[in-house]
Image (cartoon, rainbow, N blue to C red; front, side, top):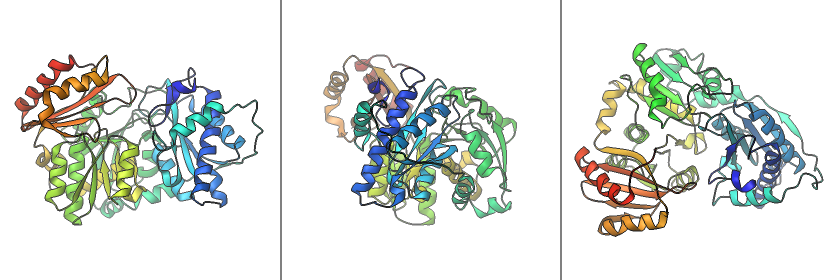
Length: 463
């Protein structure tokens, strides 16, 4: 059963089968053993090196899974600090604030409510994924047997860190919003997820924010799927922005580590276009520095960063790679097409709350509406990410390569091609027999011509 729940970047599956309390105990024992050993390897011998932060989301299965996870940690000799029902980025904060060996968030992020899982982080909230320790956690979990383990008697403490988290976040918010000098009316759709807990606790009494809430009730179920990349999920927030004449709207995913922007016209904004606005504004204020973006992003991202004298760092897709690139290049900001934004002032981690603050700051400082400010970055047209179901990923990649061999530019993540008036990246999924394709062009005709050539090879897209 262990093999069915471990994915590329976390543990995630349907509850109670195949994911259940037995596996939660195994994951707790394994993750604690791994994190404490990693801390020792790095020379950490202090008591906090045996401490693991644990948080959970609002799913009905989360409390029981959390309890089993914590017991596994304690049986491995760890001292667990339960920070309660929190957004995933809260756990990243708590790991750093408490200087613990790592942490685990019980969540299945944007998946439907019947799913659950565990996001594991190490020292300084560095991600534990494929290639960065998750294989070892999986191995340890597979051999952990509760009937044979002699409990090591680890401890358990409950901590409420909301006041500290709030202070940490709000120090980055524009002082004019904090004082009420600059007021913003914002529609916030929490999709019945953790944004409905986090937003009132962090932003509820900020004088300059008038928040119009959608989906703030946390029943353990979702009013609609909490995935901002499915366009229809944004219909309610779009309509509310126009109805209430809001300055903008945002949509949080299930565990609130992602935040998507809807402008004042009700248009949802591509996360790469939002990142271009963030980077451009940052470079106008402070020249130079590195900015990390995933290779699916619009070409405009690199153009904006380089035009302002910054260093554009292209990364593979996924938080493990994005966070590593942010550290390696000492970048101040990173952005993924999926809506994960990474901030150096948030320990190099992704945070929906911090992204919301960044959007507020951008809108408060702009002399134009969001739609007019963002228009400067709408230079190209793209398909967005399109999936193809193929019998053999390698054969399909080779077939495309045979046609476009003269245009290949990179194999950083999958293969990228530049056709002159259009360009695309094609990469295999980490978990499914799918090819993921992103095509962009100088105009719709160029994009569609390239897309049609690729479809002739791969067939009809799925989903």
